[in-house]
Length: 356
Image (cartoon, rainbow, N blue to C red; front, side, top):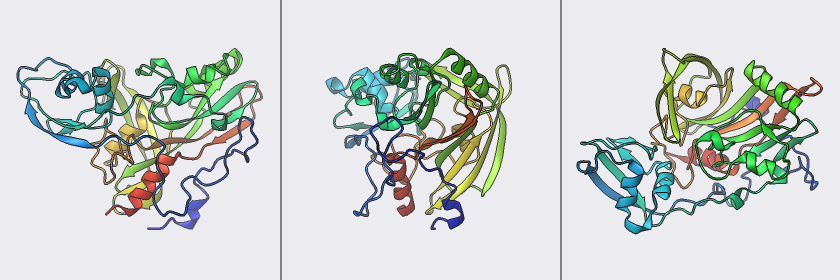
């Protein structure tokens, strides 16, 4: 199904001017355009070819963390940390469900199926996430807006050791302070205050839900054209380096409200959806779309990863923070910032349109 012309202008486009060599400049070309007719690459190294591991029923290994068990299956070719990273790609099923938490403790009777790569994917280093001037969407004396790439936590507190966007930005702007966060595998706009006054103003705006946030998501299936989903979210599972939330009631439950609108149906299997969360709860969009029966493409935590696209094309959940509208922390003037989806998002769109 082709895109309805009336929706074409509603999709966020970059506000970056033509390249000038200064922060805020960037390419004005459309991501993914080319003459080959093939989906563009995502910019991330595809995972190595996988080999099937026969289902194993856990007996003597009961009580062992899954990532250690996976490392043992690989012999000397895989460290425990590398095994944890592979699990996050959805290469393992426990009792027929994708399991991405390396710290999960195996129980007697668990059945584990593993697709172990011939060689582990190389670990990303801090140098792989050097500050990129073309990713600066806005810069002034009060704050900086950065278009975050995938596979990068915003702060060290996000539960993943290694590089983080705050450290990347502070290497150039030491005074920078993160005022909100998005998931490590979610791409798009992140704001950093440059003064204590700006930090206080922006943090207050986010807390009061006065920042209008728009995301683009690739979801499985075809949701109804638009709607609003409300629930109370509560933590249902946690461990070292991960948390899982769901709708429910009890101590600590917080209301979450998510509005969505379908931008385009992508073939028979998926849709491009514009999502506007009225609240900012942990994993809110991913949980609500999954509860609606339309999990994000590539989501291994709130979906089952049974998407009609290979992991070489989709190796993360397809969610992009495309627009922020808020009062400027110094002037109070309405500020609108936009960022285009990254190349892997565009590649996934193209693959889903062709999926049969």
